[in-house]
Every structure is written in structure tokens, then in C-alpha cells.
Image 1: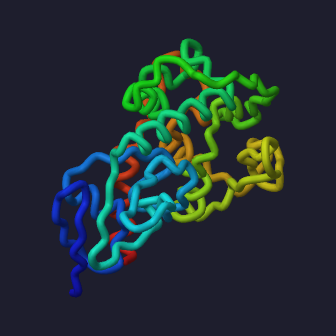
Image 2: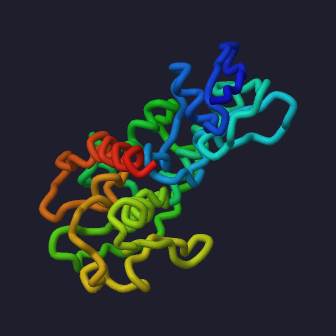
Length: 236
């Protein structure tokens, strides 16, 4: 097995050729902020929170989809990156309707955790307060578009693990949103197996079990992430 040697935050790292920068960073024990990434699912670099600086280039690169190369010198936590990550988190809060006090994921929300991590105690951006719908057509689950951050974890887990292909991303720009079927109500999509995997991997309260109240969402993805990773290894 060939190995790449690189330097990350003044730490020498050796890792298998073909690995991602995110793999290399984490193998070195360095924390790197992510939101859309989930072990075992195809990386898509949707959130851009894992951007890192590559010496010799002005362009920031997403660590989850960038392959390691011999001799790379990477910086993961410069002042530029810290400010960028805080701004990205502020944009997610201001672009949607994240009223945490009445959200089922309050206290168990990855977006909340990231806000604390980047030092966001308020948003410097104006809130947009978009008019978004809530889909309660499914017997067991609900979808609140106000909480969705378009991480596409639900799309990928339904496609790559369950094989049901219920979810997709529809429309463009500010109208972009997660859709079920061909933009049908979730409860009308026959392909749905009621497995709940999409609910389990949702990092916010966008997908939830009906009947959950504030602080009752137990969908933190560690348990399902382990299942996904084990399936990925068995199919590899």
C-alpha cells in the first residue's frame, strides 16, 4: 500500500494514498468542523465548513472531497478559516427559521453545537424569515423545511444505504429544498419503507418523529453512522 506524507498544522502525517484530507486531519487527532459529512456516505462538500488552507494556493479546498497528495502543507484553523466558519454558521441560521426553543432537536442539534464551537452568540446577518412549509403527511414522521440546511444526508442515506431513493433536491437558488418523490407529499411516496434512517441522520430538527417535543429528538447520528460504516466496509 502506497503512503502519502504531508504536514498538517505543523504535524507530520502519513496516510494511505487516495485518502481524503479529512481522513488525514482526523487521523492526526485534529478536530475539523463538518456538518454535511457522515462516515459511510458519499462526501458532497455541501456545507463548506471543512475548508482548509493549502500552502501555495489562495483557493480554499474542502477537506472531505480533496485527495491527499505527497508534500501537501495544510492549515486547518487559521484566523481566516475561523471567521469563514462562523460566517457560514450565521448564514445557515439567518437563511432559515431556526427558533431553537420550540424545535424538537433543541439541545441535541449539530447546528447548535457548531454555533457554540465557532463562538457564535448572535448573527451579524439580517434574518430572512422565509415562508416555508411543514409536511406532516407521513404517518410516522414529519418534515419541517424551516430547519433544513440542505446537507443532503437524508438524500444520501436513503439512496446509498436503504436503496429507496425517496429524497432528492429540487428547485434552485433560494427556492432550493429537499423533496420527496417527484415533489409529492412524503406520505404519498410509495417507495418510502418507513425505516427512519433519514430522520436519524438529520443534523437539525428538519426530519423528526411525530410526537416528539422540544429536547426529545434522539437522532444524533453516532449509532446510525456506525451502522453505515459497517455496511460500507462489508461492501468494500
